[in-house]
Length: 138
Image (cartoon, rainbow, N blue to C red; front, side):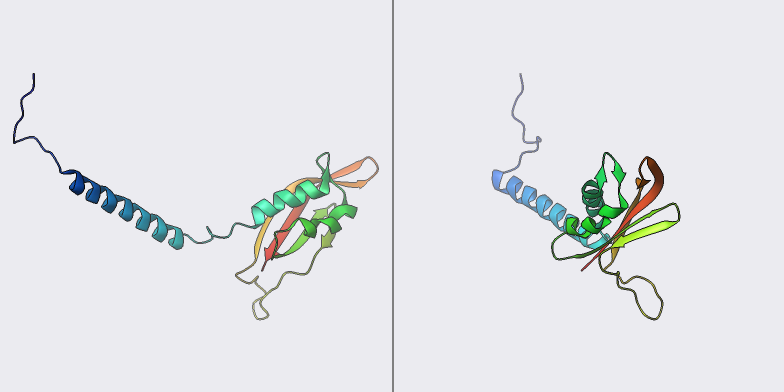
């Protein structure tokens, strides 16, 4: 049997709601500041685009070089896309050339790229290891 005591902590409902509001507001502000502080979190275009391009180009998991020209159509709306497949010392490219800074030759800050290993069909019954690379920019 418990007895009521003035020493036990109790809060008015209004005060508890105000405290809950303050905690939620603080967490929301923290999440917003954290999102702004982390570089590159608002623009992850290359990885999902790479997956879509691979799905568009590969048949049975093997990329045919003659299908590379279909790659840029799998890019995100409002962005430009360059697709490159390399295998056995050869290269097949489709799409516009990515922009570079004239003075340094380094890619501009708006360029996002990703690559992955793929199997490339070089001829009937000839498959070689290669690399699929996509470059996405606005």
